[in-house]
Amino acid sequence: MRKINKVVLAYSGGLDTSAIIPWLKENYDCEVVAFAADVGQGDEELEGLKEKAIATGASECYIVDLKEEFVKEYIFPTITTGAIYEGEYLLGTSMARPVIAKAQVEIARKVGADALCHGCTGKGNDQVRFEGAFNALAPDLAVIAPWREWDMVSREDLLAYLAERNIKTTASATKIYSRDANAWHISHEGGELEDPWCEPSKQVWTMTVDPEEAPDQAERINLKFNEGALTHVNGKEVSPYEGLVELNNLAAAHGVGRIDIVENRLVGMKSRGCYETPGGTVLLKAYKALETMVLDKASLKYREQLALEFSHVMYDGRWFTPLSDALIAGAASFAKYVTGEIVVKLYKGQATVTQRQSPNSLYSEDFATFGADDVYDQKHAEGFIRLFSLSSRIAALKKQGE
Image (cartoon, rainbow, N blue to C red; front, side, top):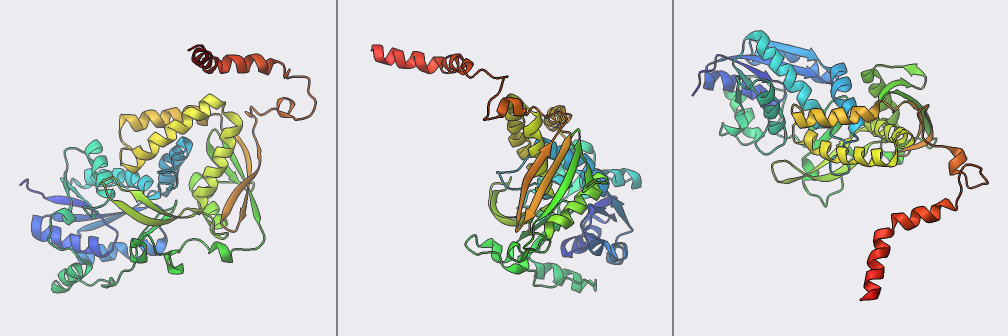
């Protein structure tokens, strides 16, 4: 086995990664550098993280602010593709992994590490996403995945492991849900959600107001886009991250963005999860509404095909691939037309586009009106229909002649 001298661990401060630090030192006789990514999960999750990592045995702990990069370089390019996995999942966990993995590799280069480590289980998607990125960015670095190596199988095992070494932890044996949060969303798995017949209890949801308890008065918000990028919310100029935070706050207050799905994991099993993506739900609705104004039928059809493909590329952890680059470039070629203004109404869990305008709009009231007009001769439709359905006509005539 290759000798490991220094490893950079993707560290969250949770039970798993707290146990991984001493385990790495004992089993690989190596120095452990902790790395934590700030992708907008909240200050409370980062508070005291450095001290905790070092107290657990890490030599250093780097906390890297990736919020703006995450939103600008990963979330918005994905929005332009229109990608939604299996028709419902807005890819919140998937989108964060490449930016985290990239930063982890950069830290490894900085400190002269010869290995990378993550705390993903052998049942999930994230192991593929992280290691796929590692292989694309740093194939020379070894990868250590403790959940695929050690013989611990439960929270109780991990707690006992830490207790034997007098390592303090705030974790307990009873952890109802597994959650993952970032600027785009929060996901919930475990607990009663493992039974698809069981309705999620109120304690599952943490980011959004219960739609049944949301305000009885609708709220309208104004969004402006320039070449696919969000530039203003309610008239205020915003950065990509600032805009998302503002939309999260506005939409969450109306219970917007909740979904409860059973999805196909990359490793072959199905899993049930609940996701809250309030601002993202509004952004995707608004973006699609502008697209329908500025893209012709054939272009929109192709962009929708691109969205389906990219949803699997993102979900499967293939961000750092030529296919990903090509799909994003294709989406960007359409995004340059997505400039304009959208009004979205928020009410009882729903986000509904009510107004839209764009300088690039292909919509023409002169042509679309049901009233009298001087620009469209309806007699021309007859010839169009005969040519459009010519193959069907030929087939029917052939049958009649048999």
